Image (cartoon, rainbow, N blue to C red; front, side, top):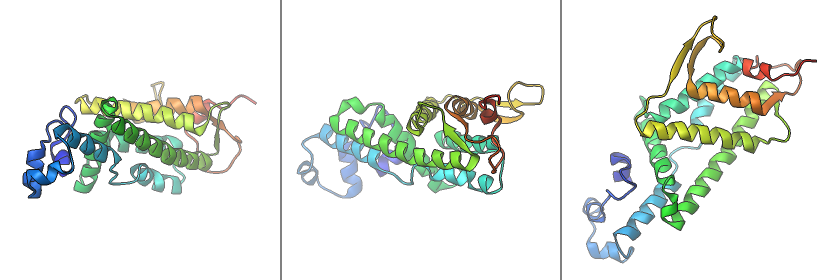
Length: 237
């Protein structure tokens, strides 16, 4: 797993050779083959272990990015931009702290391996488990944000539906980052149709999902200023 984190994903885990691992670990070939029947058997376990590995909790970075903004009653658009920027930087491994960069690398390796989940039933099960864990964690996080800003899901949609859509979009952009495709960014001013400021494409996508999935609980509810995206979905009284 250490070697995979250092080298990254290249055609899955096939470039991680058992003989190289044994040399690094100071083990004999005989010791390894008492655990695995062959190279493929070893690589299957390596892929499964990497997908199950978590160096941080699923929502840690997003929560850290927006906690101060929510405490300061920041506009909702600022929250959307900050959380989206964190995801974009993670997908590009554009992080200053080595530990954060290692977390980002692990996330991308796991994501790449999950795209090959049909290779082994054990890998498919690990991929499903990781996805479900992330959906549960992020659904709780989004519910917290909705309560802070006074919103609810539009019927018949659920917070899980919103979280699944967010995951699909976020992971899609992460796969593009793995391909070396730069994430689009926009600078809007008052003459533009989108709100003024710096936007990533992911942030604009989040804003669009919020419009379609959520509505205000009470237009007069106290709390931080809502995103304009939210306001657009409030029906005329």
